[in-house]
Length: 473
Image: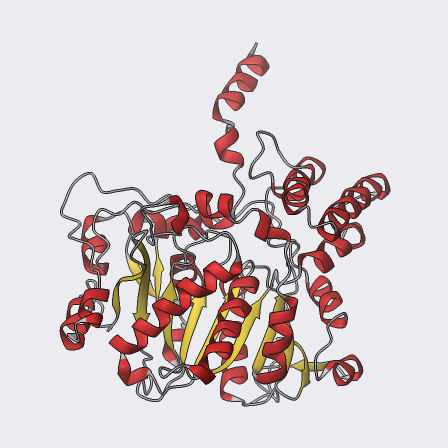
């Protein structure tokens, strides 16, 4: 009897279809506040267009949270008036020499993941505790860089549109809207226009980053307003799905997540997926991959979940996502927080609609754009050693198949052991560098690398952007 009752309780507590929606960035639920004054949304485009830049900047200033004396700015930039498409940003000038510090754009993955995840969970100045108090991150990227966190594409997080045609269906749409937002941002914050500019992101942003960088690269020679692009950094990048998908069966078998029989099934499914990609049957390829790995759009667990028993493929050592990665959702629901960052009562999107419209884009490659960027700018591609979904070996598989000006040198380049300090017993990671290109594997970290390894991530991004080399200090 007790066993039957126990099973009934377990069934009652088990998640339904909604609980199986598998995007990491949707774990944090952000609700509209029921009580209190959330203020009004701040739309900055009218101030930019009318030349009232000082007024716009003043209005976008975020009042410091209790116990903090930190300058930041936030608000909405309209990127398509026809569809009322608006992109939300939160900007933190660097703590050290903001007048000279590089401006670093951070784009979350997903698709449909809010960059508030990057801000609060990975490398922003704030960490949210369970009781909704803020405490300081030990190694925030905002120390040395002016960090621009953007909810991208339109419809992600606090960004929104009033029309179905406002949603991006491919990376061209993503880049076009983001470029409009950046041009307006640098008009509003013209003091930062001449600073070095880097585009960074992780996971599905392995598509967004090359897309916007290539867009800037193409338009800079022919436009009056130029963006001072110097390079990009991609973490666990989902830039070339075909190469990654082809490598899954062997990789998952080698790390012990599949047995021989499961590997054979996985291999057949991946072969079919790649065949669909070659035939440009994008939707069929996406749906097959979803059933195999993610389970986001089906009402039952994916094959991966069934055979591994784990819902987490972001860190080999974890079966579920850490609870504290979702605390920021409740924080962004608080009325005084919404008022401070100028989002008012705006619904925070979990990204489901963004993913829906980008389904065909999911399995497409941005390798040609990435190649062009690697030929002309500084590029960092990094992986967490413990990542499963975009593993280091799968990234290297993709890199080996790329044809760029440093291809031959890269294939012969020796791996270098990277330590932060000469006295360190622990190795931070491994580096292969060819001219302006760096490939880094960070030890002890998974897909959400700055969360797992904050110091190593901080050291890595600073060495890359400031060109400090990889010798220990």
